[in-house]
Amino acid sequence: MLPPTLRALRPHQWVKNLLVFAPLLFSTPIPGAGDVLRLHDPRAWLLALAAFATFCCTASAIYLLNDVVDREEDRRHPTKRLRPIASGAVSVRRAVTMFVVLLAAAAALTVGTSDAVHSLPGADTAPGLRFFAWPPAYLALNLLYSYWGKHVVVVDCMCIAVGFQVRMLAGAAAIAVETSHWISLCTFFFALFLAFCKRYEEVGRQAETDGHTRATMRDYSEPLLNMIIGPLAALSILTYALYTVSPETVARHHTDALMYTVPVVTYGVFHYLFLVYRRSEGADPALLLFRDRPLVLSGVVYVLLVQFLLHGPGH
Image 1 (spheres, helix red, strand yellow):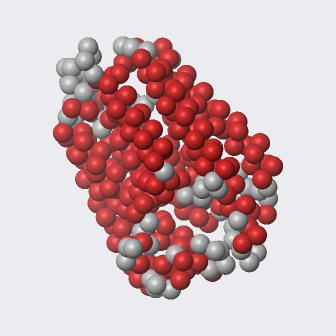
Image 2: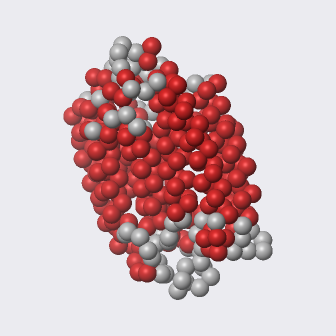
């Protein structure tokens, strides 16, 4: 129902960029800032929102570029042929203009956010790269994916997974906090799980297309993807479970109560597998997060449970 120009930006995919808010949810008191959490600092929320906007602009610019490059292949796909650029609803010239405008907006937001981070207590001593480094890294990764990675089996999905890691690390840099190694690994494995589930759906729909719409589809097969998806689902759950009980997490939050969120995460992963294998709905994970009620409910329950366990009465 959206206008073609807006649809070309794929705004429903912006839900992936909500990952930049994850460091806020798991924030702890910052050295030099007393007992104040980043979660309770309005400036931190504004910076996280700016980081979110930066990645939305960058991601939409990349989608426009990909759709321009892939428009001929997309026209042979049963659903991708309806995309605004492939269908001709948005001209290539307009798409290129929008691409330039979005990159300029992302650059301005990157500079502004990087400068504003220094206003947060403890920002100058925060470990890791500054926010300024992450949006260009994300752009470079996606350009690598667009022009090389997506044509190489397995590498295509790994590029997507690394992109999720970059979002989370950027979110931490935007509010000057440290990230857990375990949660970074969990992010990587879960994103890799989603990417291979998407490939599984695409392989299943090859019969509906006139030839292969993606070069790597010649190398993927359902038996191969089955062997990959199962272990990745297990690794996603395992690394998250280890994060909740690791000495680093317990010392940081002064509680091991996060382990009570493991059943919610486990349900979410298993329900997603159900959607992929029984409903054939793994083609667009971002869309599922809006329209599948059990997934939406489990996500809301997870966020509320984390906040209660970390910041509720007695904390």
